[in-house]
Length: 175
Image (cartoon, rainbow, N blue to C red; front, side, top):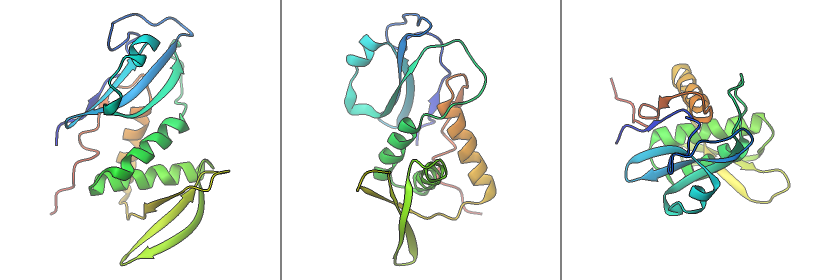
């Protein structure tokens, strides 16, 4: 698997290089091209002209000067949660489970049941005021794996941080 990298917001459109102004609408997106996960910030014009078949998730923000503190965009988190449903592998299942728990904790999803399938259990989660149920396989996360996933998610959602997703979705090596 390729080494997935993303970069902090530079104050420029990743496509045309135009400088963002304070208060301007900026579209941040994650795209999957071949085996590479790319994160970019686009101006409205470039966002409208992008190739949408590569999009995993996108979210709209307003450009602002750097302020302290990370504010979670739950629409973006839910989009990533949904896109991971189609991904195979333990790392994607672990991240999807963690995202589901995060959204339950913040009351963006509700636990409506637990279903057993063979040797595994599946959480049945539903957005408030909807009838669509999202099933998530429960995972046994070691504390260090949970911390790593949480830290990477924070870095991914924070436009002021530069980091990589390569280790996040790598399958762990067996001892």
